[in-house]
Length: 381
Image 1 (cartoon, rainbow, N blue to C red):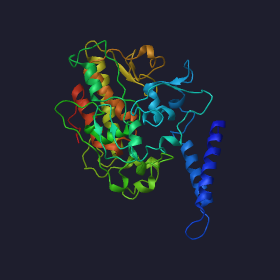
Image 2 (cartoon, rainbow, N blue to C red):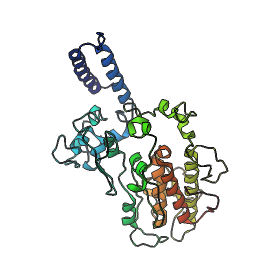
Image 3 (cartoon, rainbow, N blue to C red):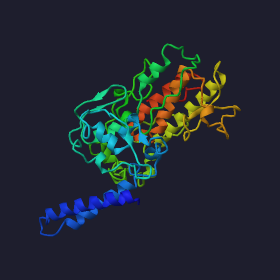
Image 4 (cartoon, rainbow, N blue to C red):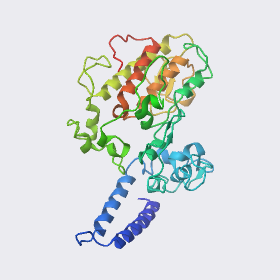
């Protein structure tokens, strides 16, 4: 643990011990101070081991080498605690706006801390505005804070604006890949109500996915400090789930339709989604190799900007191909839309429990729009 974390912990411990001392005894006359303190310290440890508290994560170290080292205003809302408090209007009167870059010390722990969820706006922040402009207004509880940073940064309208009036299969040198960003779970959950995915004209899409009442908000399905899946809760309705790894095997409540056409109507919906995504990638590669003016295309999910030119046309990411200089540069509107939806479903790894129908609809429609593979065996939800 870094010295910064030690100081945080000592200060937090002092506060909690003081509260425990003031609280005195439990109703039965026993002291609750030790139990309360241990409980909070356990939560703090869980948080520090989570993605939000990981001081080594790229999400909190990306700007360490910048001169000066600071998190830009466009990123500070979700990549820095001070930036989030600024956005909430706690440290600056302008709500929903980060006014200035946030200076950071590259040698310090710049991960998020307790204040992102435990602050004066925790119980009053009830409205979230999505990148599409859609507003979920006045109906939210504490999950609103989660949704502010798990909504993505783009929507269908960013793609529509980029492609403009360019014909679907015409290369436009001005087009670049559009990335929704990462872990856009709230956008997936609300589906067509917030239009995080690229939705094709003339099609209908699933809206908000209402889960069961006891597992219907972020911090019921995810343990709020560790962020891990609440397996015990899942298993009440899905007995096949005994570990986090088992979540991919959930199929119910779903019809027996074979969405990805592989002949297996018992596999988890996550596998149906993965199968559709594989078919979409195949369709994109055929499209890139056969459409006039386009280059063959490959995908490398761990390297920005993710889509690259397949210089030797073998369909694989070979050494030297996944570089920024070799980024994909012969986009047509149809190919860009498909790539956007493919990446969207990858960067929300929980898209199946969040809103499987919406995600499968996006993938299916992208495949059909490209028109390069047989879709007769596929099923659209």
